[in-house]
Every structure is written in structure tokens, then in C-alpha cells.
Image 1 (cartoon, helix red, strand yellow):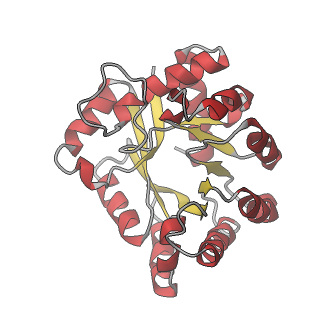
Image 2: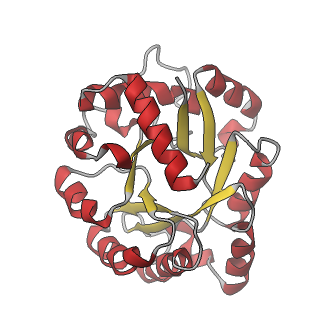
Image 3: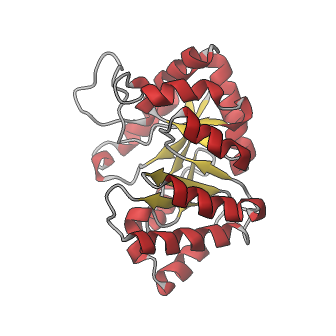
Length: 262
């Protein structure tokens, strides 16, 4: 039984002391491939550098997270585009809208998101998407470009409710489910939505080091999440969908390979 973690922030400093051990623990738990998330130019470059010694197990995304949309200047954008030519860079992003904190202004986020969407109409790479507290604006832009996207898209770290899911389903995108689904307090809306995700559009991820599953036992001494906990998330998703963990592992791996071409 093997798993693919579609979203890991392995360049985060919280992994600096034991990154090799984190990768080993993941493989011991059957997490055989991981996609390292790039959130700006520097982290995207670092993600590729980290992934290159592991050409069959680590891949990466490259883009500007909405928090970093203000850094999406012409020169940086040109350098980012070069990264998309590398075979281990398998998605454009992380990109999207986050109106919760507005580390970049809403207009800067909209402009950056549209640039990524336009790039998705010119490159065969799928888009790695983020949305928080920006449903209407996100839907408007994505729906405008969706039919022209050459590689499709995944809404990573989906935490939405049934109505938001049902609104997005006609756009024929994938959904990445994290340990948020393991939190019966904050994640109830997501827990109700997960069974409605089509089998061929479901993906799983840890978003490590963030979003440690609340119900994982024994509870780690650190609050740090890591990819070795992905089977725990898969187990919870399976319970909610009335599927075995083996079925979740197989279908999400197939979906990942189809979307990202790995």
C-alpha cells in the first residue's frame, strides 16, 4: 500500500534539523512520493534544489502564494517561468486568493492569480490552488479560465462545506484533503463534504509542517506535522467515504499520477 502526499512544505525551517529522517519515516509508512510546495520564487527554487537528489520520489510546485503576491514582479516572474521547464517541477503554484489575512492586497492577489491562470493556458502543467475567505472572487476567475487550462487544477487544502464543493464540482477540478478532516471541532463542514467528492477527483496531503491531525495517537511531542502521518489522514477519509484505506491509497495515487503526470 503506497501513498502520495501532494502538499508538503519540506523547505520549512522546522525540518532543518532532521529532514532526512522525515523522508525516511515517510517511506517507512508507505508515503513513497511527495510534492514539495513552492510559495514564492526563493522557496520554489529551494524546493527544486531539495527535490533534485530524489528524482523518483520528490517533485515540486513553483509559484507565488497569495500571501506573496506583492513579490510577483516582472523579473521574478521571468525567473519563475524558467523553473516550469524542469521535469521535477510538476505544477504552477501555489497560487490563488487569501482574503483572510491580506498579507498582499486583494488587488495584488487578483493580479497574481490571473497571471498564473494565464500561464496555465499556455503550459501543460496543472495549477496548484489556494483559497481562503475569497470564494466569489476565486470562483469568478477560475471559471473564466477553466476551459482553457491545459493541465487542469487542484484546490489544495480544501476545507470547505458541501455548498462550496458543489459549486466547484462543475469546474472539474481535484480536491486535496488534509488533516483538517481529522478535527471534529473545526472540520465538521469538511467531514460532511468529503463523501461527495468524486472518486476520480480526490487527493490527500499533509501540508506539513502545518495542520497536524488533531486526533493522531500517540500525540507527537511537537505540534509539527510530517508526511509520515498521511496514512492517518487516509484512514479518516476512508471512514467518512465508507472505503478502506487500501482503496483510498490506490485511488488517490492514481488520481495524482493522472493529474501531475508522475
